Image (cartoon, rainbow, N blue to C red; front, side):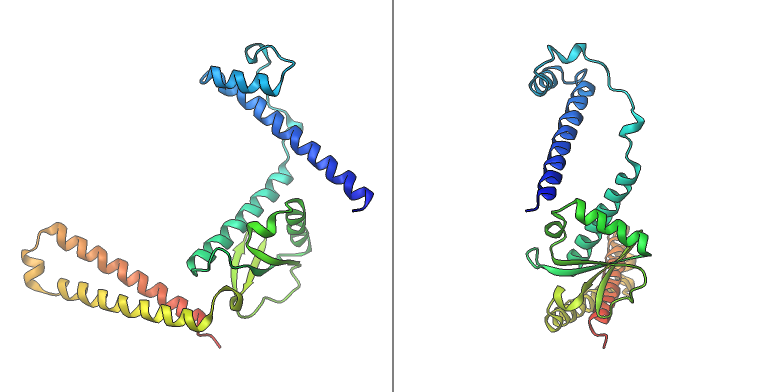
Length: 232
């Protein structure tokens, strides 16, 4: 490791420790009126030079502790993680499956922002379940045959071939679609039967209507997913 890298890492560690200690200590001051004993114990352990949390200054807002740019970058990272996790869940991707990830910024400035996010948070690859992450600027063409996650600063792409076995997923979705067809037919048959509608309790009729609406919505989603996999 280069000497400048070692110095940088040491500075980052010290900054992280100072931030954690300061935030926790200030939080204990705020918590003390509600949980006096535990907050006193934690604060005095963190700050052994202080006799008690009760005589320390109450936390005040500091403009120099308002890091607007960094806050925005962190929100973008959270948005990225949330979007990728959601799409993986929707597509039933096993938790251990690692994929490539390509992020296209709206322009070069936004692409650089993503580079900053991923560089600053060294564990980003593991959190995103990705084996390779590449950031491109807005001049790059969108990927074909990829799942996209639309973000406020750009778009993330995951190659579809790495997410799932296409043929197995088509077979699974087709089977699920057939099950939905049966449920829709059953609920529709009951609701079109005058004897059921006229004699069954109103709550039961409404329950079947709700089931039918749910099954129809699920069917539409299955059709949309099948269409995604069956594209040439």
